[in-house]
Image (cartoon, rainbow, N blue to C red):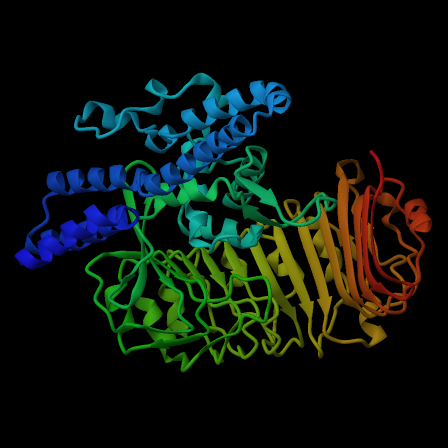
Amino acid sequence: MYYLFVCSKMSIRTNKMKAVPLLLKQLMIARSKFHERGRDESFDGKLEKLRLDLNKIKDVFVRVKKNEEELLDTLAEVHAHLCKLERKKLDEDMDDICKRIKDSAHKLVPVDAFDDSSKEDDHKGGQIFHSSQQLQQPYQRSRSQFNYYSLSPLLQYCLNSLVVFPQNSVIRKRNAINLWIGLDSFKDTETENKTAEELGEQVIDDLLKCNAIVRNGNGKNPLSNKFRISTSVRPLLEQRVAIHNANYRGHCFKVSVYGATELRYELQLEQKKETLGDRYFGYSIHTVFNVGASYLNFRPQWVNELKNLVVLQLGRWQDSPLHHIEVESEEFLKELKNLRQLKYLSLRGISNIFELPSSIVELEKLLVLDLKACHNLETLPNDISSMKSLTHLILSKCYLLEGMPKGIEKLTNLEVLKGFVISTPGKSPYRISDLVNLKKLKRLSIHIGREAIIRDMDFQSLEGFFELKCLKISWSVSDSRYDIFQTILPPRLRKFHLECFPGKSFLRQFLPGERKGSLSSLEVNISGGKVEIMEVDFKWWKVDILRLKYLKRLNVDIDDLKSFFPELKYVEIKQISNHSYIEHEWDS
């Protein structure tokens, strides 16, 4: 024991770069041992305070060394001028040199690392560091483009949670919002006027405005649905959120702090092959996130150590389908019913899942169920009416599904329904009009199956979806008989996507309802299919964003598009008959 203590002490004294990570790891182990002997909330609170203080300085050694080198480089430059007696050069650069020396000297101690915005801790005593407001020069704070501590608690909470995505990741807006909903980020902020989905959209906008995140792309696209965490912000978040990302008993552990005191223990699956259920963590895991695993295996009764799990992200979060994920067996799904606290479940893009067991309907707290691109999935539970908490049901690109389960019309909290299948009456008894009582529905995608029977007035009933903002209709058939139906679009629609439309023209197909006065700007995406001419009835709409992709029979001219859509501000064309790629924007 004495030998181990001496080795640890020597390591901390002799390797300053590893001192804090080593201490944090030992703190985590000791905390687990103390818990085994009996939990003392007061003492555990002091250990947590120590952890937070240590976490603030874990990169101080790196930053001090970097700042020292910057100052020495400047001094070396001055020394060279003096040695060479370069009077003229030295005279010209003197003001700049003096300023650089002063700035480098001010940065020697990275006092912003000691910033502590938690006022609650001030009266508890025992602070290791004072607030940087007592130390930092006023001009230094004004130079920063991002101030974490100016964010509301909600924005801090949501921003912290994004650290689960690897560094420099391109994050889809929808993935972030679904994660926040699963973490119940909006439980204290939802109002009658805004749903969780809308609050998530607002958080994205606010984080963009304060430069915490940046849009992904070349900047022309006015409505990019992807973003990255700003490179200057990521280190700050990692300081606040993570104890360390070291392996602990064979798994990558991260302990995340949300809000002032709430701890969330996250298990990240990073190895190519991962097995759940063969470790005892000693902690209550709240989140399991598949960062990069391609092959997942599950021991019998794997959920025993995950009883308090809130988020289970096993599926693909990456944008590209090249990120392949498969399970050895779908037997693990039968254990899901025991995760009574689960609010977010993603099996997106996982192979070898053929049937979702009926027991999954016992997850009555589940908010988000994401099964997108489970290409082997054929069967859903017969009746899902008991899953009344669901706000997001995502079934798109599950091409073997032939119908919808019973009770879907009773899920009155649904805000997002993707992959609603229209098939033969025997396989899917539901019509679009059956969903009209889903008053909160904001996003809907409809897939017309190979043997679909489209009845009169089916698509005209969309006029009654008064809250719907995003609508997608896709076809898996190319028979022209499937394009002869009239659709009356919802009055508040803002985004309309047609995929693999089998007709040649859109004339007299898609019309606005009677409430024309409420129509506003519209984004229209048309991808795939047999469209040949851009004759449209969209003159009723103020189409300001247009995307045309993979339309081999379509020949268009940019000027013609502007005449079709006078309000057009941005157009993206990709792989059509006469253009391989064009991106154009008009001045407002």
